[in-house]
Amino acid sequence: MSAPLDPEHRPDEEAAEFSPEPVLPETVRQRIMTLAAAALPGLPADEMPVPLRRVARFAPNRRARLGGRDIAAQLVADPLFRQRIGARIVTEAGDLGAAVTNGVAPAAADPVEVAALAYLARPDGWRDLVEAAGDAVRAEADTAAVAGQIRAAEQRATRAEHDRAVARAEADKLRDELAKISQELGQLREEARTTAKALREAQAAQKRAADLLATEKGRAARAALDHEAEVRRMRSRLAEAEAAAATGKQTAKDARAVDDARLWLLLETIGQAATGLRRELALGPAEKLPADFVADTAAERPGAPERSRARAQDTDDPGRLDQLLALPRAHLVVDGYNVTKRGFADMSLEQQRKRLITGLGGIAAQTGDEVTVVFDGAERVHGLPPAPRGVRVLFSRKGTTADELIRQLVRAEPPGRPVVVVSSDREVADGVRRHGAYPMGADSLLRRLSRS
Image 1: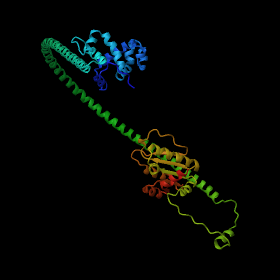
Image 2: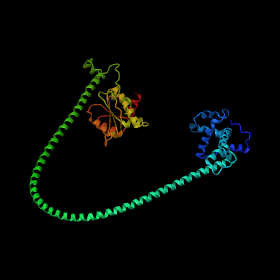
Image 3: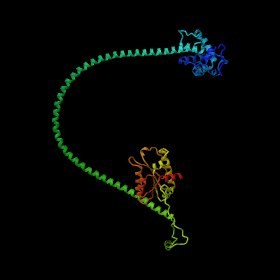
Image 4: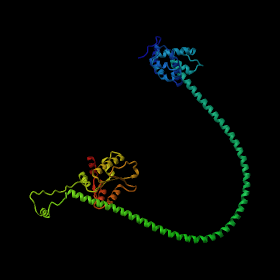
């Protein structure tokens, strides 16, 4: 809701109230804020807009800085407030205020002050006064900039003239020094020729002595070289023999360690397989005599149940995977990325590895089997968390793929130990099958993990 207008307000002024506010130069805008802030406490309380009553209580040095935005908003939005505050400011300006009220801008007056008073009093043609003041301010700024450029150019010219004078003095000094150095150089050249002649004579005498010494040294050196060559040959043979012996010992030690590990696993597998077989077959003290076995195989008994046949299972059947993992001392080897990219392709590689390793930790805890998961590219993996208990996490080295590492793991196991390899790569499946392992598809493990 707008404030009531002044009774003497004319229709042309009313039309001007609804025209857009002019764009004020920054110096003019700052001067208007300063004048309004200084005159603000002089208004009666009932004539002061409510938003500015708090601003009027500010200290004079803080009023324009902290309340400038509120004062500017009221000057634009409240014409009556602007007229009241403008009347006070114009009155305080004296003759300059009276001249601006009449629409006249004195030639000697500050254009910023004229523009500020014209904006507040708004006489006829006040926009022209504000625009003329803005042009004068910009002209003064341009004049000051040009004067600054001229001063800078004069300073550069003065420095250049000083630099030329210094350069001429330095050049004269350098010419004097050059003449002195040329004279000293001639003397040095004469001394150098004399010294070079004496040096040549000394070198000739030294060469004759060196030739005699070299002849004697050559004889002694040949004998020393022959002796050192023989010593080197003997040391080389000794080092080769020691290296061959050390290599043989280490190779034998490594081979024995591998054989011991394979033999231990084989015996452990056979022992647990026998125990499991005895438990599966419920072998206890013999309840049947040999004649009973002959009767079972050579005769029929009434009501005897028919023997069940084994049901064929697919390589992606989680039931078959459970059967293989139930074998004694089973070793589960997993082609890591082959499984994760098939089951968790929407995750990042780090999340794929974490989810698969966590699931394999659950299988290891349930079955007690040895579990190994193999990934490609150890050089691209950083900050891998520790593997769960019972799970071995391996990354192929540079130049080796995960498929090759899986085949090496299978070949390292002793014959007879159940090794289950999970991979949907046909080449991997065919390779491990030739070495006695049980290949299973990736879907069998994914189903087994989802069931867990």
